[in-house]
Amino acid sequence: MLIPTLLALASAAALPLAQAQSPADGRQALAAAPFTIIAPFPPGGPVDTLARMLSNGLAAQYKQVSIVDNRTGANGNIGIEAAKRAKADGHTLLVVPQGNLTINPTLMPKLHYSVEGDFVPVTSLARTANVIAVHPSVPAKTIAELVALAKQKPGGIGYASPGVGSSLHLAGELFGQQAGVNFLHVAYKGTAPGLNDVLGGTVPMIIGNLPTLLPHIQSGKLRALAVTDAQRSAELSDVSTLAEAGVPGVALSSWYGVMAPKGTPAAVLAQLQQDLGQIFNEPTSKAQLQKQGLSVWIVEGAKFGDVIRSETAEWAPIIKRRGIEAQ
Image 1 (cartoon, helix red, strand yellow):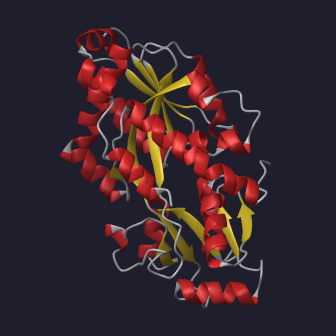
Image 2 (tube, rainbow, N blue to C red):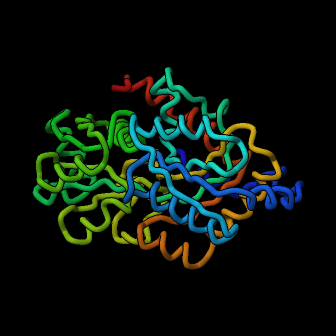
């Protein structure tokens, strides 16, 4: 569903602005002051990891102090609003997951920020597969068996997610819709408490990012049934995609990108795109991300903006059709 759109956009030509402008002026401007990288979620997760890689890379590149500001709260909105208020000079950047850019604008119409009105897309950074996994006590060993079990107990098979309207919540809604069953959504305030309940057997199923679930799958504390990506994951090569398991139309992954305050000079954006591409395409960066189940995925500027708009348009009818409301 969403992946073909992303791949088509990613393979398109890079942002003409970045190609057309010399970034020399941007490089000089960026070298003039320290950097603040806002991560609107707590330390330890993919957003924090990417923010620290970006911060370290810019510090090395410009010989400037660069800090990560974990400005958490309100499902990431506090940090995003702080980034919105920052000076538009390229020295304050926001590392953010897709849901805050493509889901929240529909789910939360009273947001205090506008994705297009307050920010400019710099580049995407990385993406990862989502995994459908169950506690070992669940008798289902395949997606077909899970669907059959859910049909026997309509609304009785619960799945944990990090919150109402999160991309993982919507992945579960889309999975149920395409499989013709109703799962019970169990919302938590973040991934950790939901994962703990699934590991403890209180909730039978979880849909989570590969980096979060992989250690527990490898240890046998969770059983992976499928990935929601268009292709199998290298880290879980024996686990089928949902399409392979007989549930088409759920080809989606989680991704993360960088936004800058609206009004950031074009030359600065061009230089940042060049810098970030270099930082994340370094072999050591790729290896570090791969260990965590992430892969580098760079789509710059206007093309990244197209990805955001396209996904927003695709998620909106799902949110409305399933009657999902922010809590």
